[in-house]
Image (cartoon, rainbow, N blue to C red; front, top):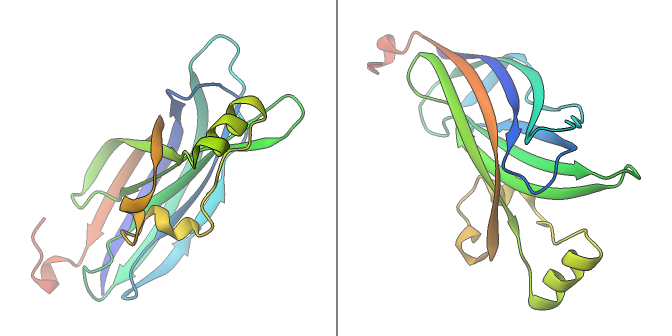
Length: 175
């Protein structure tokens, strides 16, 4: 079996309207993939920078995957939340990015977005908070009906990933 080992970190986030952010993350793969070691999902801590626009998380990622085929290449998906002074959590954005297909070290910026909803929901979000959320978060990394959503761009999640590929040459894949 061909193997992919991803080692790195979710460095942090930038470009969001407010600080005091945390992130829920996961990795999604196709049916031919299996996890040999490591966590498939997790959550960062809340960072509350005082005078900076960058929230630093430094959350480690170490996952070892094996596959029988290239279909369903691994991708990270993110949900970024803002935590207010009363410890209420509000969704600030969804995003996803593919694990790089080339071995080596990679700096990745994953752009995020959030659903806007109808006009009434937008007005409510501006005054009360707690905007619309997806009923099915799998929609973030699947192309089914995603083009029907009305969204607005949010900030970026920054990653530093090291990718190690093993035995791909035995399956006729050159890197």
